[in-house]
Length: 458
Image (cartoon, rainbow, N blue to C red):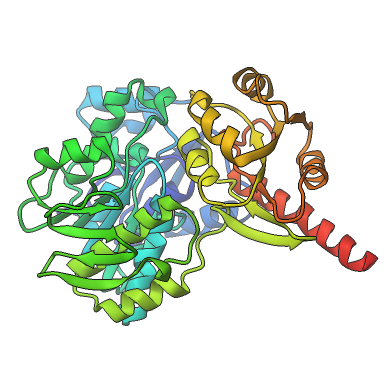
């Protein structure tokens, strides 16, 4: 337990999670000190004025370890690396260093369903939240998905359940964090620029289960080799999901077009066609959502209705428009090769693929066979243009664009009736945009202008 009024908190970073931590500490009557490089403007500046009136203190500028003087707990936002000078100094001084989700967990008074994985966690988190909303429970969806976990706990919050998306960055600094149900969808190479090695990335993902015991539940994807390995190392009750396995395990499975549960005897939960969000990976996301719901007692009719009604999330295989028989899909959230791998398998029609941006540590060679089967043409953008050109050197349909507008117009000209124009970059957006959301919005805006132009011409 934290004595919120007596504990001296320092909050590192004023992004969404940092602001959530400050709000939480102030709601408990504490007086946090917060640091960031630059003083925010706009709405965040107004928040700072309000927080200062409530007892918060703020420091801006180059890193200065003196901010730690007298501190008991340093709350680190995900954007600050573990080797940042203030973090290293706090550890030397014996100050407890925790993530915002750890702070929030210590204030939580309702069960938490935590969802992690390299891909699919946002969709799964929101779908689980929708299932429980449809059942009538008061649910907060929070964490890495947008709303900080700290905003869903503590004074003036009253929820039956919290569903939280959790990233590897957030798991770097947890100690007591213990979800009632922890879901791990998959683990493939990502964020190695931050974590260094794949083994370290796996270790961090496994921290999702570190404090669970046999009274808790871990939902793991049997089709993912890392999840399958971790299943033997977890103390909680393991529930499996699979689109491929046909044996006898406790879990939720998709076989012969049916979604079945073995958690309390054999039960037909629904049909594959109840899952309306596109792509084979979303079958896995739906199974994970069904498993979490069944663990916590949601009736199957509620689950089926939610699967049918759930439209998916913005920027994740989002259907934008159909123009002259050509479907435009916004998958801007696909910032790694695995996400593109899923996207290219999600459509039966030929694809004109818009790809590129700032590469992480890409392995686009994995996509060569899929591109040969599914892709009519590739439109390359951003810093990764030359890298992608080298990978797909034997693919004749390569084209280049300097802006998103050029890419969309070119893709539209290259596509034929019945085709899909797919923005699924496989790279981050930071060479051309502030984030994947701005990239996706720009794509949709350009498609919208095309739609208005074509409608006007008709």
